[in-house]
Image (tube, rainbow, N blue to C red; front, top):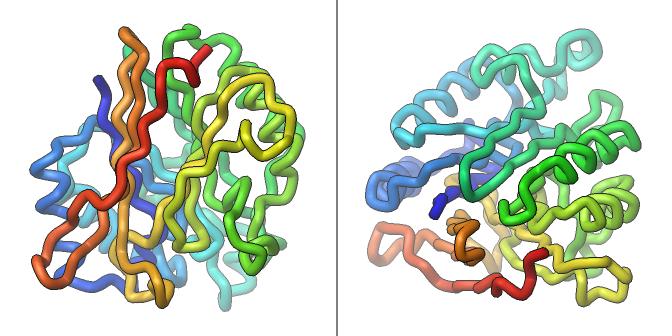
Length: 269
């Protein structure tokens, strides 16, 4: 079994020290194999904020890191940097590849950079990105759990969040489902949920789940939702998958598992 820890929207620059400490303790206890950083790693894409994010990642001691930028990870006020080198600080800390990949005996993780320098907050996925991911999904072993990581959501549960949905999401969801994707994980809206896209009436050929994470450590929480992360456990043989939501509980000063969503083997190929 492979254990993945999804940390989204930490917004370093607005992090809360007790929550950071609690998340470090959780990572040490769970010992995940992969860290999924699904964007908005920093608040304003400053060099110092990325350095703090890098120090945090190193403290987690997770063997593999898959990190993508969010809209907050592109400079907002430095227009020259936004236009000519929008990902300079992200690349300095997390490497030049903005769409990294991870694979082992249980899972294939494909990252997609959905940010654009010319969009302030909205995300976008191009036809070329959709097809690149689809072709890689098709080449994967059928038993593998196939996870696509984006920043902006491909689906939402509230009408008030509809404007945050990824541009190009319809074509992406249909193509990736046909190619064998199991999960599309994201962040951006600071609202955790697991949504069965195959039950939405989109006519998908197989089960595909949208998995959203809340903000991990930032004080930019929604009024009704605090800090949270997702723990994803997947095994290829026999095929089994679980998504767990872990919330920070101030009273106990720790992250606790508050919801478990089992992905039955029937949801697979």
